[in-house]
View (tube, one colour):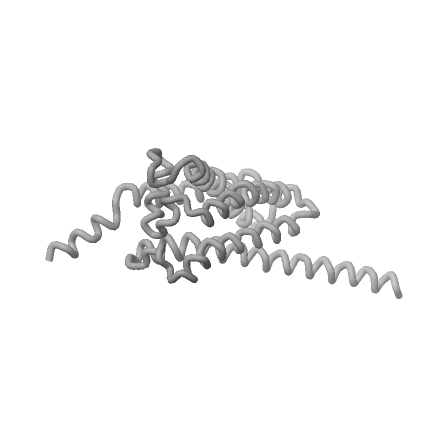
Length: 212
C-alpha cells in the first residue's frame, strides 16, 4: 500500500513546479510584450505576436543555455538553474541530458536561426513589412522540421529515450510542450496561405480591369 502513495511525491517535485511556472512566466512576458509592441496591429496579429515573443524567449533564454551546456559538457553534469529545468524535462526524454548529437545539432540551428527569424518576424508584423509572410513561412517550416527531426530518429529505434510511463512526462512534457510547436506553426502557415491567396486574387482582379 505504500508504493502508490509515494508515486505522486516522486512525480511532482519542487523542480517540477518551478519548471512549469517558468514556462508560464515566459508566456506572460510574451503576452505583455505583444500588447506593448502590437498596439497598432489587428487582434489576430497581436495573438501572433504573443506566440512570436514567447517563441523567441524560449529559443534564446531556455534553449540557448541548453546548447551552451551541451557544447561544453552535458546537462546531467551541469549545476545551475537552467540545468535543473532541463534535467526535469530529461525525465521524459533522456537524450537532453547527455548531449545527444542530433538534439544538440537541431537546437544549435533552432537557437541561432529560429530565434533570429522570430525577432525579424516580430518586426515585420509590427511594421507591416512586405516580407512578413516569407519570413513567417520560413520560420514555421523550420519549427516543423525541427520537431520532426527531434523525435523521428528515436521513433525509428523504438523510442528507447522516451519515458511514456507517466501522464506528466507523456502528455505534458512530450505531447503538449512539443505539440504546441506543431499546432501554432501549422496555423501560421495557414494564415500565410490565405494572405498570399488574397494578394493573388487582388492582383488578378487589377490585371483583369486593366485588360478590359
